[in-house]
Image (cartoon, rainbow, N blue to C red; front, side):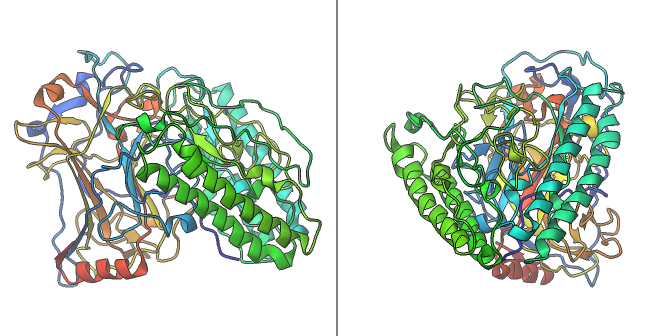
Length: 620
């Protein structure tokens, strides 16, 4: 059995590579749907030089390897965040630009990304993505008009966790009951956390939920996930489930952007071995050819298979796992086709050219799974009902074409099944999809601005040679929620071309002829063992901002820097009408800027990057 490594948030934010311009002392929140206030903007000339570039010593590595992945010319926009919110459709609650891997979605697995096509000219299949920038047509408020750090009145929010039942390998018969008990425990932990949030014990403290609910919940989930992994490891290789421990508070779910399927809280059954999941998979794919390049690309949603299987006989585990991986790859291929074929064909193109062939492939694979299980146990019946897929619709009033499987929205259970490995649990309704031509969602209004340039660089270390990143390393830089989680992990990113020696935690106003820029530096030090950690931070670190040295116990890896430039008119800048897509409680806060990365470089490409950087050359 392969050790299935799934997507998860990895944040490496314990130190900073630059001296920040100072935490914003004015309130940066705007009312829902309005631009950020003028207090959130600053002329770049008023920002002090603050970028520190440590001098490269004799043992250091001064090279730079640049990758050209384009500027999202394919129009791959999505509110998914497969690194930070794995399995949660539209989990980011804001829209991202994606470059690199063309198949990636919230449901992606490491294995499903390997064979994908890419926008990167050197064949790099990694995924790089960041929140879009918009021009808000509304008038900018002249004054701040709200308290610093105040979260918009959206209610207490609701806790969402990575799903576990549908991200497990095949569950052996002998440990099925033990796994089910622990999945039920995860569901109970989630219910208790949401009850604590609903009581809203300390609404004046934006860090209350993070410190008293999410932190303890993570610790409980770490222990429970380890018990599940240990049980599975008795019959096969022990999977690493710890990265699924981290949960988050979300606001503004449901009710925005049209229908999203069944919001019911209880289980729904139908006849068949293992009480297989019933999921509405009907999808009207008409008029997809009318979508232009600025339209969001929908993603494929298929009924869950992992959560619907009975216990698997030992002799069938490897075969079933291979087929489960194949199902993931089939979905990834279909997601890629949605991007590369955007605008093609007539009103039935997606049904005929993508969803139909996908169903045929799934029927064959599901039949192989049933046969493999049937050799050593009762053959499961009705798996073919899980073959039909649809779309996670992203247009106005879109239907949920696929399932409304809450298993990836909660702590290890689903809302629509009583399958052996997926007990029912009360979960939040699905998150809203972006609506309309401008893909607006939860107050993120206005037309998306396409980057004029995206520069992706792998850089060296001032004190030592770099070693290769592990494949499937995930990282995020910055913090998407400094209002609710505090500013400790947020990073100043805003500057203007020609002024890269300074970074601001506010939006910048640039001189004529200068482009608005965002510069995202990722951590450049790795613990040498883990591609992730329970809190998504402990396995990576930033180098010392003065010396460039990695902390003790960490080794230097190629340090990723992504610089994004925009042509935004000076008039729009001065009026304060450009803004960052953000979580609803952040209200376009520029200090919530962030960038995500999943390393899918081949070993050969990573070796070239390491050699270039260590040789002190500039390569592309």
